[in-house]
Length: 250
Image 1: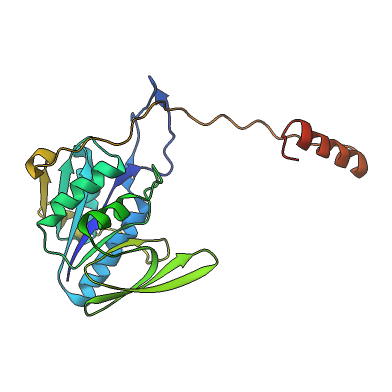
Image 2: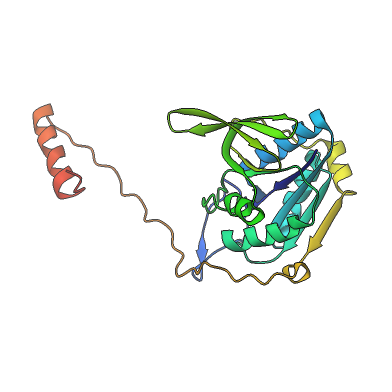
């Protein structure tokens, strides 16, 4: 089966975010494959090993995103496609992915259930709508049976089993699998694998961002905690006073 994996490059989870001239400074920042997308890549590789076929990873972003695609190729993906653009909001990304995917042969589209940088969790859902495909999100177990997928998805307080026809868009949640590390052989092979770069113009798509950034700022620093000393009764009265007058939560 032919599987497409939508992948995003994000800041390292341990990166220290700093602002410069009202924008996020990228100086010294390390970029990684969005962790939830790694689950999607791993699941695609497992399905390929079980059913045969081909895995293609596809991303939207600037030239540096090639590093993330090369990592997926080193893990075992067969081909990669980069739609090279600076636009990165969910609307534009989904439009561009849909246009690129229209001409591809695929049985399944996988992606992470959320990107850790913007936390919007919109792209896969928008993509499914653009392609008029069924979608199942937050999946922790995936089984393929012929032309259908049986998905166990995470819901509040438990899990839900959903069966859908293929092709479909399915997003991966933590727990679906444990992503493999690229081997030295895989890293060397990745250098020879196809990584195709295309532009929105070549796709014939003119997409205007639907998001306007008005201001970028860091959250306020947390104030130091207070230690209330004294006897229990006295401390309790002081705690209630602080909650009412300062914290204003009671």
